[in-house]
Length: 267
Ligand SMILES: Nc1ncnc2c1ncn2[C@@H]1O[C@H](COP(=O)(O)OP(=O)(O)OP(=O)(O)O)[C@@H](O)[C@H]1O
Image (cartoon, rainbow, N blue to C red):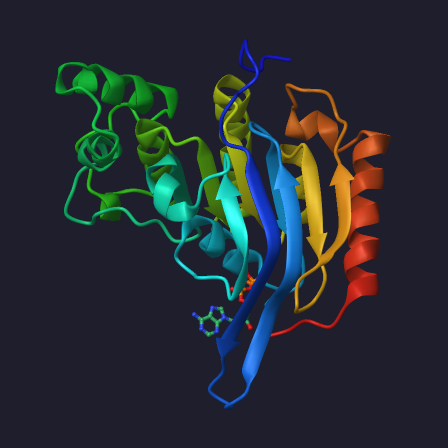
């Protein structure tokens, strides 16, 4: 496996006794999480799947401090979100690129946020553009790019920022299946090189199994863990070859069965 030479020492995540309640417009509160517990070692790639509305995005928001839990703690290396905010990077289904900034300037924002030394910034941007196969598009604006390219730029900004933890909320969910597969491969390439902790929310079970070390299947609200499955498939992974592996097919099937047994879709 082409993982980082040394095991990552930072990026451990612990959700302990998380309870989240939201007010609903119907006047009664919605209990999204109740006594939710999950521990993730530094450097692990974890996918979170489960029915719509079960609280997957809420978990990411609690960890990043965007949502306050009513009870419990979400810690990164033993520290709260306020103490570790700069160590988290987010990527969403819809890109959050600045529409008035070019590809290189959007990536440069990640370096600025990370307070990277200006002297090496140009070189680092060029490396990232090259790594993400965006060469020739440096000066393009987001509206001049395809959806897949915009997500590449988002990845570039994330890599420039270089957080310990990647929180990815259906990052490739809006892409066509071919582009999605390509982006999955890119992400694997990045993860196998950098080995950051990744929390990856997806509705795509095959994507979850292809990418992850571990898949967490949540129940309908309040989201609890129905299945915590280690994906023991060798790395580096080639998604095209993986699809034919009996072990891969078994994992996908097992997760589907668990989701089907779980539940009605929620809104
Ligand atoms: N800020 C908020 N205010 C009120 N309710 C909210 C808020 N954020 C989320 N919810 C509700 O909490 C529940 C869980 O939402 P969340 O987005 O975490 O689910 P999800 O599992 O990510 O869903 P999906 O798969 O559809 O994206 C939903 O019922 C949602 O309506």
